[in-house]
Image (cartoon, rainbow, N blue to C red; front, side, top):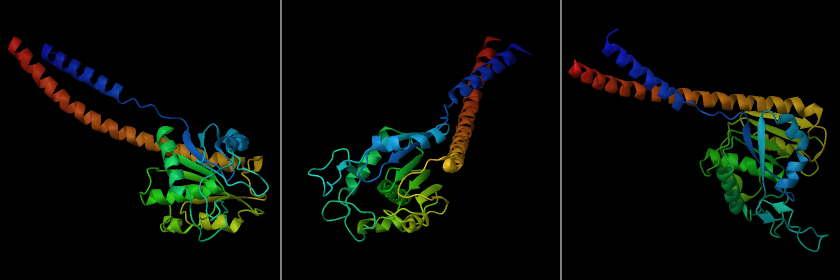
Length: 279
């Protein structure tokens, strides 16, 4: 090997090594999920109620809980509203909310949407959404708005427990297109607050829906009977996420390697010219 050849090979090797170092990407080992509580709940209370569920899925997912900006209207039996009881929006003229109400308003919805968008932006990145009751209805609406590109939130999957279609007139357009992201729909056979038929109607708007029906009422189940379904769902979501990251990494590698080759050619030509002149 001549001095010229040795210098050229050394330059190319050094450049390639530097390119590989630039390509090292830190891949998150869990998917991150933004969670929306139900009516008269808050983020901290919802987190506590999902303790067993989070233990089941902790290996695959991290859950972040946010709280609605509105205080729920006081119950008739209470003298004043309770600050810890929150609402994403009101669908009755008296400022309260009821899931079965049809044709009503959506007071406070836009403010709540901005609140969730801010959480998605500042506490992310997130891959998925999870909601219970009114929160699950909200998740369904966000998925519809994301499909139409009417929100900055872009969920890759969703979990909807005791969910339902919003009866507010202003929300009807969010259900015009079927949603294709993977979803898990959870509801109870004896739910008297949100009858299972309402949750089934919501699930019908999703093309890639998995259903977990339990024998109980209006709550988020987390027993040994549901454990494997939860694990399988989040295993699949994590696998999809890691595969997506790997594809992005491969694409970036191809782009950087191509640029590195061009730079190598220019650098090698310049070095060759210098060596020729010195000879």
